[in-house]
Image (spheres, rainbow, N blue to C red):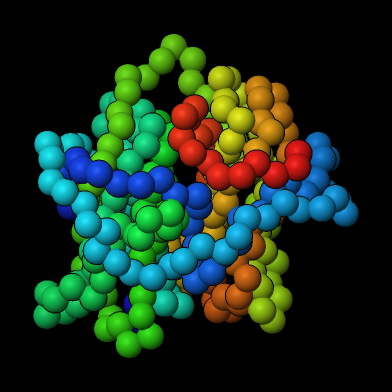
Length: 266
């Protein structure tokens, strides 16, 4: 499979009922908490985790509504039974929260997968995304799924708001990928500034030799406030192909009022 293709299409989208999820997975991905202090080094502190979440493709049952804006599909790729898609908020407003439908088609134009994720799943939710910034979503693929040749993404629910004078900002630095025989672990240092919420979302974007997105690892982290700086750990709980590398880690503050799951130990 060639995990290529920068999609140049923007999709008109429809608002509907969706549900909020707690991170992204490729197979049963657990979400990890902080593992270090301000110096960016790992520590032996316990890592809070959440329970595994399902990753089974489903229609999602969204209903049609009014037309929305964006998102722009920046890049996508198919690897390891996951269709990974990087989106950009191409509007002039902050996307506080959205549920998207991901549709992948084969060369004959037939859908290989079309999903918004089941209730409480984590594949298809975007949140806290400022104008011009990126976010990754995924669609799990069955073992017999054909090669995807075209991808479309549309909203099924949205919550946009105007940009405020001061916005929360979370910067990820010192990203590092460590491989084992049965796991892939990404560590990074997150620094929070501005009116951040208590929860932060982070995503590790893995790319192939051509620089196209291939895998996404994501999780939510707690106990943040302006000035917080911590080392985080993202785990896939399975190995990744040797030709994949870490391209970047992106992070955003989760807006107040978005359910973020049980809070772990800070």
